[in-house]
Image 1 (tube, rainbow, N blue to C red):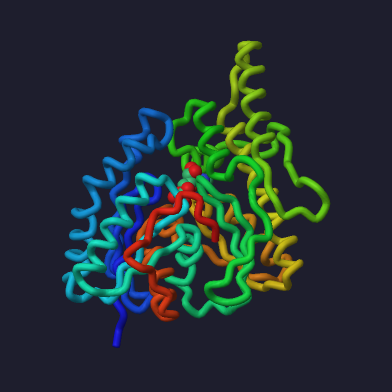
Image 2: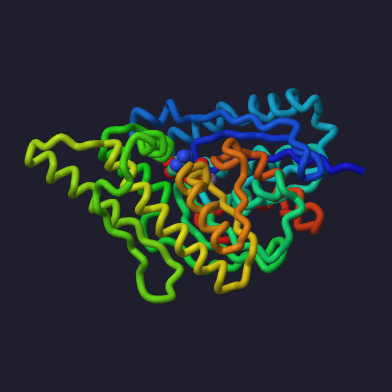
Length: 335
Ligand code: KG4
Ligand code: ZN
């Protein structure tokens, strides 16, 4: 018997619904992005995001069913992101999922957004064997997570200030590139020299697997201010490439120190910043040197989407890890 899961994701600025069969057969993954709405504010405005989710959630769910050629009666479970994220945004998805689970009398599954990002890897590679290490890099998180077995997450290191994606977004904004900054810096970097501008790398204390990107961000802002005061032209491509190199170098180094420390041979990448071309390339290079394997989700499953939530939900379904109808949004939910 096959298991059909409806996934719902509304934690930030994407309203998404997906139909996934048996954890691997993705029948639909509809994403209504609010990027154009938030662009003019230079970032996500929480109140506006909630209202947009409210407008979008039902049409997006219906479209996901329609595209999959499925009806509500085909669903075996509803999986929804209940944290971490913006509380008003999360509540919309959670309320929609609870209503469906109650009306259809099927299990409700609460999914941690980060578990979702990690699970994007299992959607395309269900054969991955534990133990695994995952570098989760998104707009809100930079976490090194050790997974001794499925469903078990041990946090080895995390950012002490800005998340990697947040640093990309803030630096892009200061450079006048727009929002979201990650893809724009990634693209502009292709034309720049990553060694042109000397920028700091924060490795922190010996043995620490934590990250810090605020010093790097400040160094870029100071560089821009100094150039402005001296009326010097800034080579934006060089600055983007140098900044990206500094972020990527620290991420890659710490990931391999962690992999060595816990004797893991397969490293997964997850989260929006996992779409970064330079991060993927350098991880692959280091993996070849270290005799490790690095895997990452396809580009469209790196940034927020409901397919990854449905996949995490599928494995929770197999463990009968269900939520009650009292499920609530938890903005600061930990893994
Ligand atoms: O995972 P995600 O979609 O949302 C969160 O859960 O935060 O990640 C969004 C973040 C943004 O900060 C965005 O700038 C960054 O991922 N991002 C990238 C790239 N694509 C998206 N950062 C660097 N390079 C990219 N190609
Ligand atoms: Zn995310």
